[in-house]
Image (cartoon, rainbow, N blue to C red; front, side, top):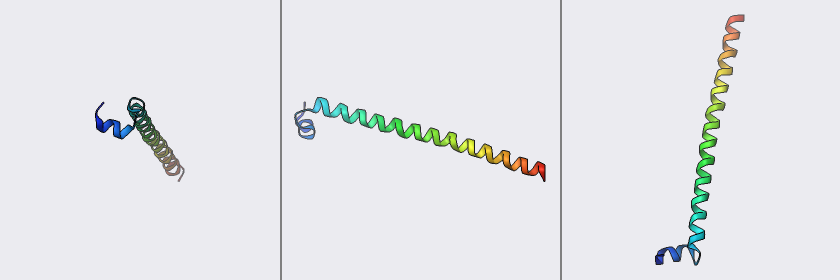
Length: 60
């Protein structure tokens, strides 16, 4: 290990650095999942709005 890594992670860089990587990967997955769910929710809401608009136009 390089001296910079030893100073960064103390005496346990083989444990600390993978933990940071796993944390970053988990956060990335959560962000992507949230964005995909928001997109799905928005499409469903827009679809409901279109159906309501069409039903009002048909009834008027």
